[in-house]
Image (cartoon, rainbow, N blue to C red):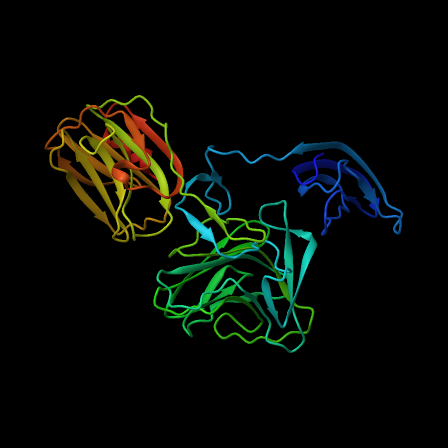
Length: 428
């Protein structure tokens, strides 16, 4: 191996009786394997050779086989599939910066500890299945908090979102706080996945993952003065938190992120510095298109309900000829557009459907009319003033209205489908 590079180790343990096996060609914490099964871990090599060893204290008895070591390479310019929320979808996101300089290790000095002890776990895997989480345990009879030094001392010019992955250990409740405002907080039940009491200047969200993990998100508005974003351990209830501890109670945490957006994006890992992920766009995804008639079908969810108009559509490379589905800047509103030969836009709205839901949407057109379908229901029909011509470009950024969200399905049909086919296509 090459010291400093990341590798993926896979091996099988069988005939387990006692003790453990571990990979010691890495820094702490070193995970221990003490059961039968096939295991995979990613690690940064600290040695040119792979060393697996077993404890002699417990007289380890087990068999190990099928050992594989491969260099782990992060690919670029490839579609990113998001499994973190269960969407299992093609993900496009805007540019964002994680202002937390150590997102996955809460035991380092860039985090301020007050009444809590942080320890990297060697047993509790993070939601990504490879990294190990941090155990936060409250001190005896102390207000137990975890604070980040990634703080702002001036009035916020934009909304900020703070997010972290949390798993209950012996405590079931946490609170995320923006200390700059008394109403910048949200309470979370991390045993049942419930948001409790919420500050009036805040919005929040909790998303269930696998193996008991939840992603908790707090967004505070642009008028507050930010001191610090904090994670509080709490053991009272979801409405009225009190912080007291026996000195053994805590939670597991991983993947903290603070960003200047009105919603949380997927984790941008950091290790010692802030990191920016560039805006993602999709190019060269164009199939064969029939300009005279067809269907544009998409199954997708936006990252935010309203705020900015975003679209997926088919064009001729300009705004003169297009068919387009738009997630409008008005919350819970969709718009369906058709335009030909640089003439007027023909457009109708459908209100009352959340843009952050995974909706099935279709726009069907011919030379006379176009219709919109959402979740098995025809939501509107309109005559076409100027039929589009020369459609040859499928884009997540038609008319520069970049789409950011999860896409599970995207199809173009070269013929206008019948109503019964469109109902079947878009029914959830």
